[in-house]
Image 1 (cartoon, one colour):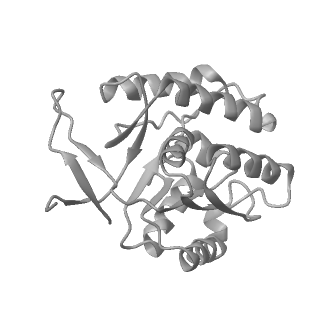
Image 2 (cartoon, rainbow, N blue to C red; image 1 turned 120 degrees about the vertical axis):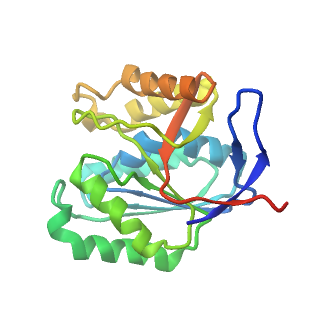
Amino acid sequence: MGAVGASKTAGEDGVIRLTADDIDRVAVLGAHCDDIAIGAGATLLTLCRARPGLRVDALVLSGGGTPREDEERAALAAFCEGAELELTVHKLPDGRLPVHWEEAKDAVEQLRGRTDPDLVIAPRVDDAHQDHRGLAELVPTAFRDHLTIGYEIVKWDGDLGTPSLYQPLADSIAEAKARLLRQHYPSQRHRGWFDDEAFLGLARIRGIECGTRYAEGFYTRKLTLNLEG
């Protein structure tokens, strides 16, 4: 649970807008290489461009020691341009997180041990993929007093929901996200869902929902407002 300050109560469209006043450090977590970029790449681009020198501590549970790790390092360096990025990629087998629970828990605790972030970005708790969902369940056991938002990943399971938080995106940011995904993850280009139409289509829908052209949607279980200031 974390606190954010309100920039104003509501706009003409009735949407309450919140802003994190002092985001100096962010922790981002993914079960697989490309999860972070797909779920929150445009938000990272937006934030890192607005806050040069931002510290980003990233954890990915699988893909370590493979070409997928090389893809992830290049991709996150691009999405976190201008930031101080530290990325750790572990070697848990894809699709097997539930039976590697202790290793995953240790990895999350190690991340917590080296960072006290203002914002945590991770998978959402009701994601249909067992690896995503398992990681989402672990995050609050280590980051107990932190503002945590869960990203969404479009997939075959059809598990998209109704986000509770939105990050509006400039057209150039939304288009850059699609381009960088295509550029930095060649191993995924053969997948039927890995294309600009899917990424921009979801961003367009989330944009409609929050009164802008493009947006990324997020989910949160608990949020404390700080309205004193």
